Image (cartoon, rainbow, N blue to C red):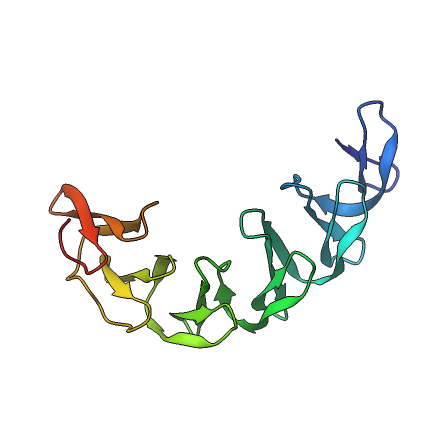
Length: 194
């Protein structure tokens, strides 16, 4: 559990017997996700520790968050963002105004107030030309323009549907929840009503 040193105001970790596991040396400690916690060190930079307090990501980032499902870190430096793997290796350099975790082999990025898609090698596969991309899977993404949703094929960058009131990715890779005129249904991977 967390504890705060009342003399210095810094935080550390202790076990159930209140024995110190990690000394009070951090400004901030996030709840552990799996075996990883993002922490803010005295120098106000972010890094990550494991359950024993060992540093797993060095304290050199202006921003850091962790996703246990993908085992990736989203990191920020000089107001730009990129992706690290669990070991701290840069997967996508911090060149973007915003970036999502890699999902289905792709990440959504923002540059100059527009959104696009990168592959996991960091290559732009959909240029930053959309007002907003809400989510993606390995084959499609959902774009939002003027409060209307469209289903778009990642490989061809072709819009597959007219404007819907809502579209969302489901657990099924080629089935998309959609809404139009107050009614809900599903679209298939070609954008046709399923």
